[in-house]
Length: 267
Image (tube, rainbow, N blue to C red; front, side, top):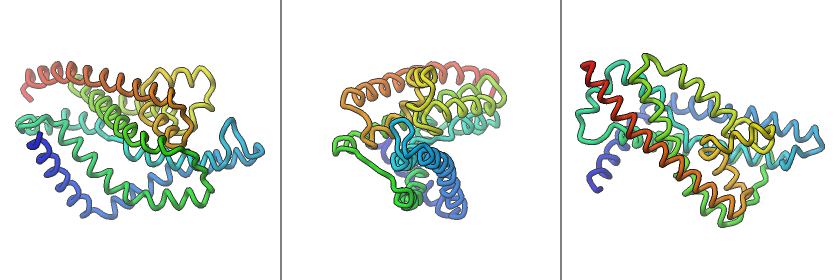
């Protein structure tokens, strides 16, 4: 365990040092992330005001709080590993990683954590400023905030393993861009990124409850806003754990099949 921790620590130092050399790229990424959340925020705040201040159970201040919380959750759980894995397999960049003493997934975890730490430090002050400008209204109890952090960690792990597993499809297809696009589109509309899921038509809301996307984004977002009861929180943690287990089982199975095929063709 200590050896693995030392490896993570070494990777993270390298990533942070590399990213700090590309400050302009970091600032552009942070700015694009803010724009991404500002668009639906402005739309829904405007709609709420035009409807007498309320849409469903959300006021304009509630919408502002929702999208600020969403920004924090999305930046914490977001990964780029589907595209990355596809490119590594296609170009042969995976081969030298297989010679290292640890599984390649550990390197990606370390890279993701390091990158998120830097971007989070850039985004948080701007998120607080946006919340103040749009009069965001947060109503969580202390226990909501306490359990929010483990829900966020669970959401990241679930999403990371799931997307890393999807990226392994690159062992069988030349490019994973189409798969990534389909996945990203479904995630966009069924995770709560465009709108709170309670405002979706009932069939879509039920579909979102079944699929894993909600539990990676909407669940921790609604949790930190104080919109969930203790029973709903326990159910959410159970579903996160279930999807993480399913993803881990699929990952181990597909990885073994994919590596066998990758080695067989002489990569």
